[in-house]
Image (cartoon, rainbow, N blue to C red; front, side):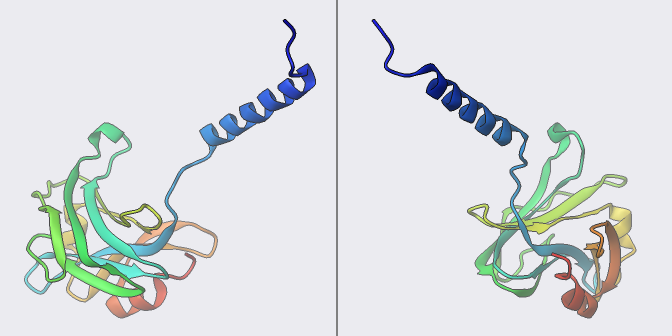
Amino acid sequence: MRSTTSRPVFRRFVGAVSVGVALAATSGCTVPPDAVAGISVTADGHLLGVMMVCGHQIDGATLYVDSDDVNKQVTVGSWTADRSLTPGLATWTLDSPAAGWTATRSLAPLTAKTSYALYGWTKDNSWSASSISFTPADRDRLTPGKVRYDSISDNGDESAITVSIADFRAKACQNM
């Protein structure tokens, strides 16, 4: 019995499939950011989530232990907005019920010297918010009206900065 597929055609097919598999294996599958997450505190010291949505939407936020070891990235709190956040600024308390938000996982106590990260997401994974990493000591240095977030410079470098809410609103979406 003789094959009806010519060897050159078969080789090209196998080559194309191999290239496709190699590209898929080496490409990063990340959700594009379209918002910026930050933290602040209320006048009575409660931790606030701060989200500046730049163009599309964000449906919720998650706070987790920030670790290079995936097995140590434990979720310590998660919140879903009652309605998708659209472009603009949103804030909510992380450690108590907040109007317009549902805690899908109530905030666990934060541990000293542990690094945490807050990020935003959409239910369909179409968009995300850049995250902010912080420790309880970073939180303790915040004052009401100030936001800590990761700023992205013109050359793409990221650094955590603390600014007024007005500056956060005006500058957070630059370089997105």
